[in-house]
Length: 240
Image 1 (tube, rainbow, N blue to C red):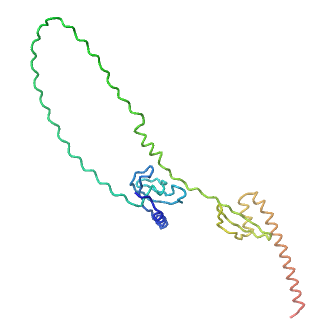
Image 2 (image 1 turned 90 degrees about the vertical axis):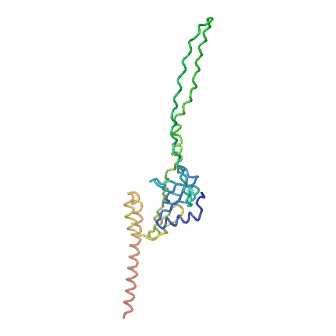
């Protein structure tokens, strides 16, 4: 049976996205599963992971990992049933043995004969004992080849809070080398509340920055008030 092609893998991924579980059959390369047995694909990983196809074999609740060479979309032909064995012939009836003839009376020996030496008993051939655990070895090998379901690793994330010279805060999020959230403005009071919820040391490090930003805004307000008062006075001098 031919393994899965790239087009068939693309079709399986589309079926999974549509909410269905595609049916596949195991090839002779599948480890721990009988060739020709069917299964349901429940998830697809990345081909670089090796055994990236998660399959639940028919009649089983376990989900196992397989490569593209171990499964196929081609349904194997149905095996023909073996012909029935012919009925056993009846056992032949035993024949009756003919009566043994009456032995003639022994003649007296002409001379005393030397008695024959007794035959030496021949030792019976000893049969070699079967090795212990021979019948259990195939089952143990099959269990060892069975691949348990591998848990997909969870990637880490980095959350960065930044305060500029004007006391404005922003947050960004990265997973590995990919930035998933660009710098986004956040309120200073939200940063202070989050710092207190995380740890006392974090709150102690952030609090001076919040205070400095608060003082800077207070000075800015005073400047604007002074500018507003000067503008109002100039307007009053001009009159109506």
